[in-house]
Image 1 (spheres, rainbow, N blue to C red):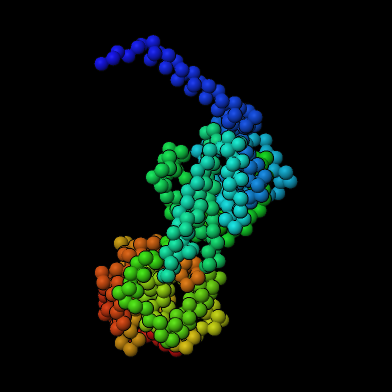
Image 2: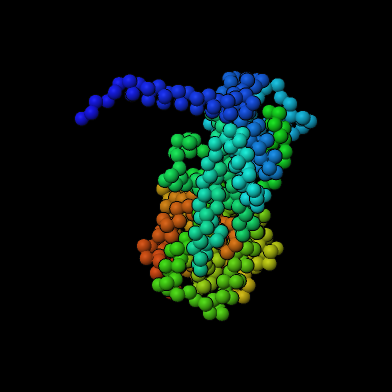
Length: 461
């Protein structure tokens, strides 16, 4: 075996070190030099040069998007929380000048902004300009759920998130899309195999752990730390929305498989019922939303969404759930004002309350009120002719958003457990003959209403 010449090895190592040194000098000159804004003097009032880097990175990013007419707005919960505390002072200040960098210099790895997709048309030019300014960028995209349906499971991908990184700080740009339920939506941040997982601390990002749904935003401009920034107009509402924004897509693949086994009812009666049920659900949502009452799809309506992404035509009603703590005494008058007559009122606020309203041509709306015990949640039922009480037990659940019949509505996040509690392990099999007193898997007897309370707890109209 031929011996390796030590002088050759030494020369190669020296050459490699020289090339690496030249690369470092080049990178410093063109990306980290003061003219490119990545080596910063201390911002007034900040506690360290690192804090100043954050401010200057944000300034460069806002300059970048402004020069390309891209209207971003701030959605970073940490910064918005600080702004919310000083909102009156900031909004009343004529120029927003501050003796210190109070908001954008708070130590963190990234700052989050949002973009409405329809306001941005020139991605390539923006990304090229970002590179020239020294930014590294990353685009995360996935399938567009708005194009999915029973007839087409689209494979078209759209951008969900962008990351712009400069020096030691990153900008997370979340792309929001309008949906048919009159709301905006952002997708999850799912990294594909070829993406550098050390690019930023992805697990720390505030947005992208799951899809989210929000009301369409109204924004206003403020001067924050001497930077002109758009923020949500109603900060408290946005921060509240963020904490309950998780979104679940309808399961179109499973729905298609269901209809292959059980062909859909396309009769005129079924089509007409679905039309009426959709109109009734929209009216109920409008009424309860105007009252500020949280509700979710329950019973057969929830099953229809989860199993087949549509209203079950033989269910003959619309079912909603409401936590009893959200009950309001003006619910009945509000529905009556909306044109729905009260069909029955069973139970009372402290026990087994349920309301039923008469909709168009025999389609009724049932609202079940749910009560929380130590280890479960339940709603009640009442048999009018006998005074018998029933109880339906569910495992505890939280609420997520979904889109159903062109409406943004809540469903239980733990939908499978919710549906299985009510309909058992065979919930995928349609059952047209259903007895509310004995068919549900989670029903149990709950005694009798005292006869002297019947006039109050059993009201049929």
